[in-house]
Length: 467
Ligand code: BG6
Image 1 (spheres, protein in one colour):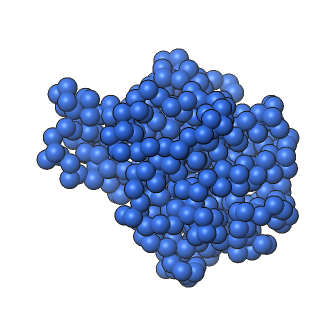
Image 2 (image 1 turned 180 degrees about the vertical axis):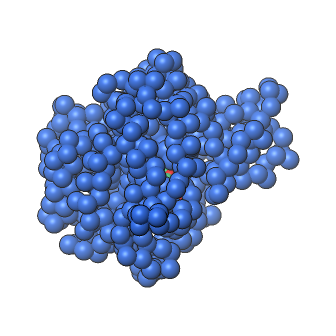
């Protein structure tokens, strides 16, 4: 089917997973520079050479070549994050680092050279390490001011260069990875739900204040929230399972409900009470929260199931738990693949909020093999990735027919990058293969995979080439 004529096709990345140059040109350390094993491990004292993110794929020095390749695929939009610690190395300074600001100036100019609109995430799991160690991240109310100062600085600087913004990446992931998502240095098992939900409150207030700042400084721009999207199905039609699924969904909707509606939802009272939480909310916070987002964006990789039967509890169904769905296949990393779930989720979000939606992450992480064709060209025959993306995009088309206003689609990891959960390079998402490996070997050379020309055709045909 033909997608809407202004549909924003593109790809997505995050600074810490792609840039490298972790201490160049005045950049400070971020929580990613001390987590060589990803989201489950405790941080190292200092950056260690086994941390693939320190060099990543060296986008910092090679972005011109990479953006040219994105342009060749026909990208209309490129989602990236600004590394907060390039702009404010410690996070709590008054004066920004000019070299960090200049890097993104050049990067945005390069995008515009090809007519590509940047879509910028302000905070993608990259809290400056100093804010994490000295303030315990978002547990501390002072971070609201630091984040707002950072956001205002980049809004003023990139006026006219960036018109699509996101506040926090996957804001609802904080309970699963308090350090990487919330910058909270205290070990996860020492944190109470009170601590976590207070930190969440601070992030929600910060997000709303930044939405207001964006509207004030950049009246023509749009700013959205970003949710880890994972529909929750009841494992059976048993009413208790259905109720359980609703409760789990609400633990995620909690975040978008506040960011979209501007106040705590009615169900939050009981949810917080049963967890024994009493939030500190000032009258000023209540006013701030009323600054709501313009659109709702989300990542989508999988759905999950819930059951009221405790015997089903043991299953690590998917990235953030849940019970495995017996009807679905999984990726090599155990993430269950559910294209129809994407249509379901798009419809559910729009029914709930009546705001435009943007799919800002979706893709398949897989082990790729670089081969040499008879004519000497090196490539990856990634038909499995093409099938995954095709099937999801067909469902996006269905959701458009259902009447959901979808702003665009940015495929995750449009060029191979270091994975977030496990911090490895072996898990690849890209249309472009990067010759770099977990043992540190590789030339950093880029090669087009089969999916490169497939996606190019999808964009050129505005969706009609999908099957
Ligand atoms: C999302 C994150 O959770 O999933 C990305 O926003 C991440 O940063 C992506 O890379 C895929 O996860 P992973 O672990 O396969 O890289």
